[in-house]
Length: 280
Image (cartoon, rainbow, N blue to C red; front, side, top):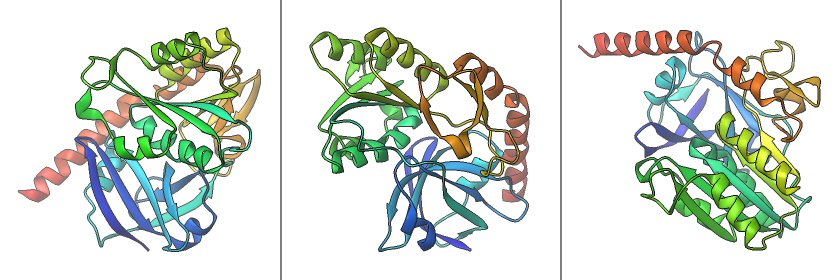
């Protein structure tokens, strides 16, 4: 069993949990993920490794409450345990491939951008981190993002946090001001990453996008996480989660990501109703 050492609310719908998992912590690297189960009957969900402490034996994950399983996970408290916590899975980020990089995170995707930016900074790279949120209320990890970058550029849809605009607006301004990057790495909603990659193709900058499709076993057996990259079928769990952003078929990925949205909504509502009845 994997004990919850810390639980911290980052915004109204996003939570950080630090889990005691010494074997995972010993081998985890930036860009990798774990698959966990809340209980014996729970579904398997993938979550990116946000922090890892090899000496202390802990791994931190950050999740947004969007469905039945993340709702169940969010109801657990410090001292309680998870049923399963498997990893690290996926390929780690190549942090030796850029002397100057732009790391772009959108919304909860900043939880994935953070460890990658931190790893590049530790490797000696100059890191410009563009973080975008809809508004100030939804901002997470501001202090951590600033510490993990040489320069933090804040943007929000409504202008309540940093500059008003989109992450693509911020990247274009940086490029037009003369900033030159060896690589751009983008993390966040699929539509956002699609347009980041469209812009970097125009600017001629090598770009990596982190993909988080539907995933079940994390070993390439189920095929649920398949993507089309460069006209070939790949699996995010084994071949990724990071891929050449200019080769990803984002339209197909976006279509597949919405296939189970209605089922997820019903499962979430049923879970909320169940716990509401138990509370009564």
